Image (cartoon, rainbow, N blue to C red; front, side):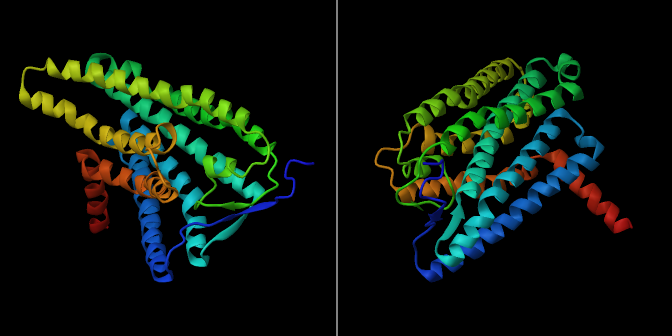
Amino acid sequence: MNNLTAVNGFFLQGFQIHQNLRWFLFCLFLLIYCGTICGNLLILALVSTSRNLHTPMYFFISQLSANDVLLSTDIVPNMLHILLNNGGTITFAECITQLYLFVVSETFECLLLAVMSYDRYVAICNPLRYTSIMTSTYCVILFVLCWLFGFSIHLIYIIITIRLNFCGPNIIDHFFCDTVPLLRLACSDTSMVHLVIVVIGIPVVFIPTTIIVLSYTYIVLAVSRIPSTTGRQKAFSTCSSHLIVVSIFYWTMFSVYVVPMKGQTVTVSKILSLLYTVFTPLINPIIYSLRNVDIKKAVEEILHKRVIY
């Protein structure tokens, strides 16, 4: 039997709901997708054009925005098609490609959030050495390493998944090709895939989490030694946006993949999946724009130039 066996594609059920609700969700998710693309492209444009934003922190924020565009484009357009048609077919190759881009995007965000926490640690705990440590070359190297690690480490998992036999039912009760519902359809033994997922999870999830926890532990200790209340508030304000993004991302990811809630139904799993595939890419640029004075100033400068011209 070849790798594809009797199954050449899958049927994504999506959301089995009333037609009127499907139309409402279609309009809602289409609006969210448009807002996600516009918001993240705006941050990319601001960081690339405004000299005040040519700093390591905003460089990493722009890369987070680029990743959010990739994640949303990988998931949402096909999900909108599924909503319109009350389900939709996807070929085996398309399913594996969607899964690969999804896991790479999630891995990159895990690593990037860890790098951003380290950046905040250096800025607050070693401010005099910040410019010498977080040079533009060093930032680009960290960014490239995050992408290379994400693309390379998951090749093992994807290759093993492709070698599985899918010869039974081909209906995936989800709105995209996620790991758990896909492996449930495999006719062959999936123990090796699960082992690889656990092994990959150590560098992908737990090491970045450890870096984030340690970085903010040192940050809190350093800030607590600042004598003035104003100084402490100013130091914490540079980390607040990043902490909110980290909290939202890791809460949803841990809820679905690491420590699933007891008795979690398929519906609950889909809702949690919506949070990190649809809503989080929209929330991230909102958090960084609404809570960031520099980005607000950059927007005001562009609007002022437009008015003048």
